[in-house]
Length: 418
Length: 148
Ligand SMILES: Cc1ncc(COP(=O)(O)O)c(C=O)c1O
Image (cartoon, rainbow over all chains, first blue to last red; front, side, top):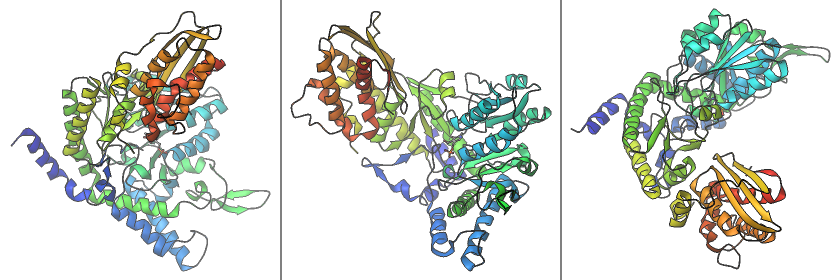
């Protein structure tokens, strides 16, 4: 047996991808007459039929506004929405369901904390620590609050492999440090950050930490109690769920101290024109009619992934990433960007003499969908002195055969530009 | 969607590899910078006008093959032309790449019709047009052109 097929057999033993792929109707699509090879999962992943069916069930049998009426449908929708909240709680191993706030996504969750915590507690001269690896959505909200409050941002550097320099991070703390916001997994490089260690360091200084889990929850088992993070945010659409929904976990004591992000219905206890008393958490942060069906459908996505098991997904994807990394390493003229020891599901690279945008277009001719550009992480691009990269990002439904097709397609691009 | 490989013709690949008029002019009378935020194309263009005529032109930048070849061929064709002629070509090039001008009909674009195919590749239209926007900005003295 060849090394390749031996490896394939051991991969199949980890996860029966052939069976799982049948759950995803979109994977049967042909693009330019070629079978779709979807490797843009870090931007948004695909939805299995079971999850779509949950949406249809909700819309067919359970929809009404929640928390408002005594009729059957409203009670059903409310119960299902709250059940979805408990699914997120269990998924993240959060202590209490009231510590889960539904948001419209990662960006919304970060803005909620920047506004609700930052605008209440930051002042002139305060410092907020971010890392070089952040997505723009974990930079801009902090920059906005910092500008308003006269606070400044401090940035944790990375080494040439794309790993955060923890010793440098340690040195950034001083009496003015008020907050740390950091990604769990880099969307541009795939680096898995040593979040647990970095959170412990922040806590030695009494500083709370928000973790951007957008790229972590689809690939790793996340346990907010074990991490001891103060806030954790993610998006449903990168988790085989719908767009327009995400969640924020926050420690109850902190959420309670925060000011609401938006005002409106559902987030109040009582309103007069003189004074409004806010509802307890999490309702305080869920003003207006939330995306009810999306939250319930996200619950189904969590069920789907949990049934497979995040540990198994992580094991499978690690092997797939190792295989893909090996294959790309062997290609002359290919430079991998982001070679951290601990990585998840992302392969960013540059082809000598070929701009990423051309790579993306030409791969599309072969049905291969990758992302090219700065990945909303321009500081990462600046650090590695590239204007953009090509990025293949995997999900558990990607296969070694698809990696081979990616490599073959890249070979054709190189030939064209030779 | 059409196959983008049809767009990557010999001429475009060749201009990408060996762009004409590469390098900025030390004695430019007009300059502009062009950015395409979506794909990261970023070019600098410099011109020297003598009276109304484009006497010299040079460009530099980080760009995809479509953008770089478009810039290279543009600089070659506008050199020696009057500003009015060059502006007319800017208009014609925009029209061709957005499907408003038939490349088989009358125009002044010459071999630039190799870019006609981008009209069927919405994500690449901006790459091809960027140098032309930048040329227009340089004439107008507006410093920066963006495809957004
Ligand atoms: C690390 C990271 N943070 C935040 C986001 C923003 O997520 P969303 O656009 O779903 O709010 C993304 C997604 O692009 C991401 O990869």
